[in-house]
Length: 495
Image (cartoon, rainbow, N blue to C red; front, side):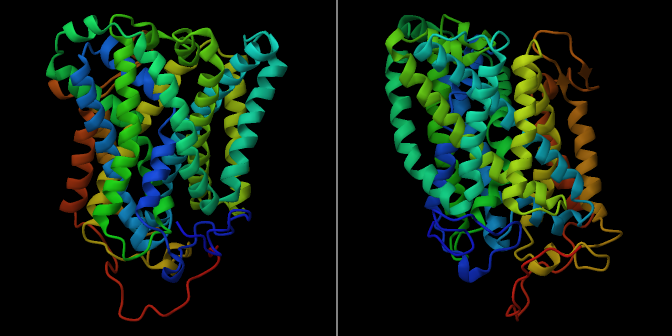
């Protein structure tokens, strides 16, 4: 995207928070979204996702690739749909959501989105710190066990956090530029590593693997979607808000789906190939170390550099989005300070899981999967609203006072909030919550049905949310731009 005074130059800090971007300052093309989402998804976390499809769902390689295409590219097509709202309203996704849920009713979806972002950032930060510990071990001969070397562990976490803040803090223009050029650098490193992983594949086992049942494919699609596009869905408008108002909706959707889908299908497919006949990667508590052990010794350093870069490219985009979500909750701080608040939380979380807790990945992946239910319910309502709403009042989006356009009834658009809540309840009825191999901590009443057992509860959640919202009346307020839009856009949020 072309740099503008509002988005910031490559060496200045973006000053805009959640304030809508005036149409004259939206200069971005759809192609920018391709690079942003491509870079955000070249993380090594795609490899263990693919490994689980073979080791746990017992799919063959062709089924795993099909699942990756539908789950990853399909879920990021949904991210692209949310980008349409960003182009129309010029504001972050959760800020635009005030028009749908009301300025108070929107607090619930916004808080859930922030929890999801902080969860993924903690996953990224912890994983990246493990990467650096492994790198320190190779280069300096230090102890790679986090609990045996707490000072070095904290240093590793700090290095990643500082790198994240430097990029996220500068803001939109710098992030877009970094995502584009870093894609080539770290993408090339990942290809280099992938060649050596492919060499050790047992092609006979891959070719002779029987096809898994359709039910396993359905579960796999849900797993991939929840771990990729669904988790990013609320951030779809955050980058697209700088897109030209003339950019076609189809281009936003295709750029998002292709940008994320290409690297994810490659990484998920590679994880499935590597795990054929060897479930080590899928069962590893530390996927970083598990992948490193599959490579020749001399490949460890380039692999770890590629792993660190991929995690950073995902994390600084997540933190940028989380900072906007934090501001949408009504916290009165500059955007760059919201970035700092978010990384402090993930810094403390990473310290806890590396230095205190006995396990990390299983509980956190479960936590994030649970949050996929309310996020999918939000998606159902928000996308149903997009079908009719083509305009968002820029002044009202920032007006938290009683009587504003998006105040509705006591600050709540009840038909949207009720649809969201009903869909969450229904979604959890089809859900079973389990941490690792332990006994389930929650089993929904319909979790044993075909839909629940096949992991399709998230689809039911989406359909129920959209249906209840539409059947109760759908969007409220002015849905289309008035004839005169000459009034200047606001610069601050009303208390």
